[in-house]
Image 1 (cartoon, rainbow, N blue to C red):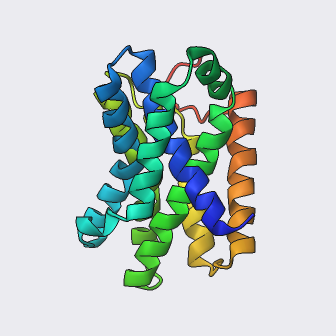
Image 2: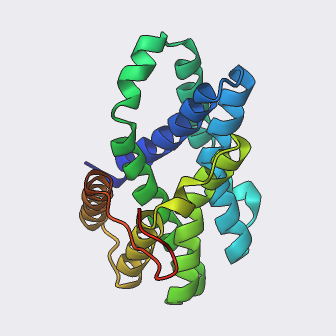
Image 3: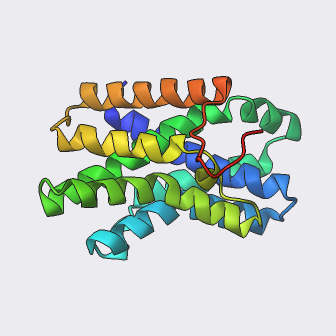
Amino acid sequence: MSWLVLHFIGIISYAASGAFVALEVEYSFVGVYALGLTTSFGGALFRNLIIGLPVSDLWDHATILTVLLTLSLIVLLPLTWINHWKQRSLFFDSIGLASFALQGAMSAKEYFADDLGIMILASMFTGVGGGMIRDIMAARKPLALKEEIHAILTILCAICIWLGWSDPLQLTMIVLIVIALRMSAIHYKWRLYLPSKKRG
């Protein structure tokens, strides 16, 4: 699977994630588009602000068209089809997390060479920023702040880019590792407990 394919799967996944949250909280079709667009572009917006890139760089025609087509399809699909897709949404959402986190790290590396700190920040905000804005707009506790695995995986993506992983095969391998770790964390309920926090 090429990197370009994974990139667009990530975009579609995050757009759909925002749309599904809007449907769950019973927003109108305007809410579906608002949350879908926010999830798709919110993280990249944070990234560009952090590393000093123009926000206008985000408005790639192919990406915008992909997001709008995905959201339009979800609005028009029967509810039974949507529920069937949602059962696999965590798998595709994991692809989106890896894809966006890698994009953030690669953008930071392009402008700041090997500054690992900035790469981690860019990777983290690109990977989870859109989802956090989505959850806040839906009056929900941001998932990325409740489950440590999101931040850990974005850091892993940043470190891999810092180490020089850049060809499509290596990037695909990172995505597969992120999927495996994320799905395992969900299945086995892996958590990092703070000493001051009571387990339960």
